[in-house]
Image 1 (tube, one colour):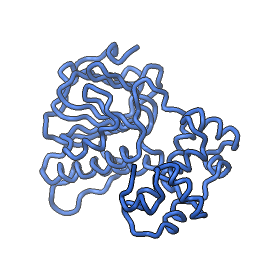
Image 2 (cartoon, helix red, strand yellow):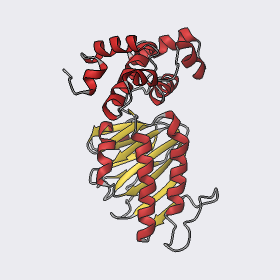
Image 3 (tube, one colour):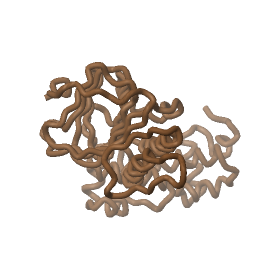
Image 4 (cartoon, one colour):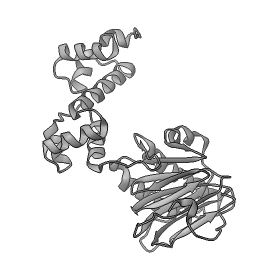
Length: 298
């Protein structure tokens, strides 16, 4: 069954300009259909199960760790994904801030749909942010904003200007955390083995660390041979080649933005030998590190 075929009656969206947020835990049969779309943006953050969202001609699943954003003015519908036993997710209706768009841009799927699979290490913090959005939406503008509490009602509307701005600031943090270094969550595409994604995130987070196939495999609970096979099959490159590329990118950023010596850049990027670093850097960028820093780039 496609999202376009999902049953469900029309469900009005909140008026434009409001910030409305909530958390739902729904089972099979949950469906929302908006033939006229919404006057505000809709953000969904999935924590468990699977959802299915459709906007215009675009359809995308929503799995744990996926942030799916729907732009206003386009017919959409969403519900528990076919065959899924539940969909637990946070949602928020709001007007996005213009500077969020470059963050969301890499996840654009068309028809105003943006979907990204957030890095694994950000999930707990994003979840905490949405709890804060729910609490901040209840702030009256006087005294301290309420602290998130387990017994909070599942939906809140930010009525006052202060509450709206505070809730938007928290949502901005969630969007930034989800999109920084995220993988596009393309419709119909298998998100791949989560253990490989976890290894990619470990490399990206600290490329200069003494990673090995064995150490990365241990961090994701796989044997080294199984890990290397899965990683290469999913990414198209062996783990150590991916690590070298990450280290070279890190080194290039350090050369561009710091005045560290070439030797210190090499060490900070995981290259214990400056001679080896100079050789592989020249192979990758066409010039030695010192010339790259001076702007002599092909």
